[in-house]
Image (cartoon, rainbow, N blue to C red):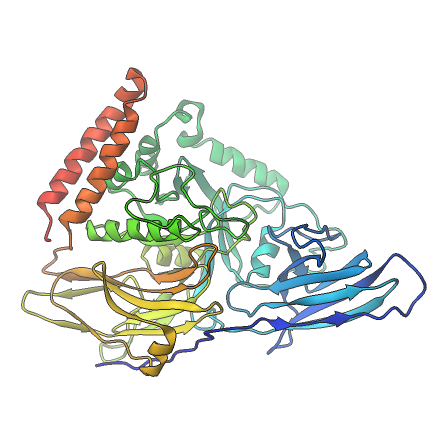
Length: 540
């Protein structure tokens, strides 16, 4: 059955311009005061958002704002903000994650001006109510209140790289005025070492209740074998193999460009890989990997290159027969990028009472359920577009099964909201473009995508790419998998892609000392054997 789905799209959005002109009507002084309050437009409920401001005559100079929490770029506007600034004209931007429209404009503070202004922030979509819960899979520990920063970006889940006790906020008593934002799930057991992200090596996955508990948790983390003095010189692959011995631990590739990637994949112990990370930053362009293999082949060296390179690597991983879900997060080298800019939306299944009822997305109700969904690939990665896809009624991560001689008819469905102008919408099937259209072309077609007629094993993903110039701003679903006769799709081309990568890695290793080369030798030989054996299994 072909399903027709709803499309909610804002193809071109001109940010609302709000101008505050404050008259000089009080006694003489050197500046003025403006009290900003913020509420959600529809509900009229006070909200927490991120606020950026600079003088009109000094657009690149950030301004300190007293008694606020830093948010990377700008500060947190916690429902109300008092601005006491010198007399001047200022530009501002107010935002709250990708589900809200951006409010921007100018205001003037004149001598001894005093005023209060209420800003209503329009919501563009509400994915939480639709069953999709957002999270940042890796963000640096910070003494700035992480819960408050998450609320300002409308993000519900975070994995903090360690723990730092938050500094108290001047003029604010958390006990008397708690942050009413639920759920907020933060785990503090994440360690990022040498391009690998280790989850669950500590017994602590929740925020400490006190400074004493924080110290105990840190001791717990440091007591792990991977953080002991004997383990400080472990090779990344040795850390990976050691983590595999820890019950419930998970390991993700935080740096998909790492030279050791073919070795890590050959271990078959990778649970996830970051498709969006700290190479997609708001504060500046990243054109080449800080550490790792640069983009191969003819490429345009601009801010979008690394996003495309990460995507190409991931597609080759799928074509090599792996089922590794994509992750997204701020990363450990994120500069001033706000928490939750690169994010993962996770949904869950509500199983039908009988086979005649359709599947539909539910909502993860606990932090454990959210992470279970992330590791199963019931998700979408994004740093902008809001993509809620299904394939033949199933959310991402589902495995469609068939037998030789069968044909599976799989209808793509999606609900999409976007704030940036969109370049194209695509359905990728086994690394090839099954369908591609501009958003206006897609809308004229009634939002109908041609069905996929699958007769062999493979995978499918949906993606939306914007016209953002500074870096790769897009959304991509985790894959759906198609499996005929219990045989995954494996291509020789992708196997050779990683064999060439490993050969280049080995050439780099030759520059090491004889003792260091000897440490790598067994893992290199094992990976060579793995890739040769997998080539023998290739179906294409």
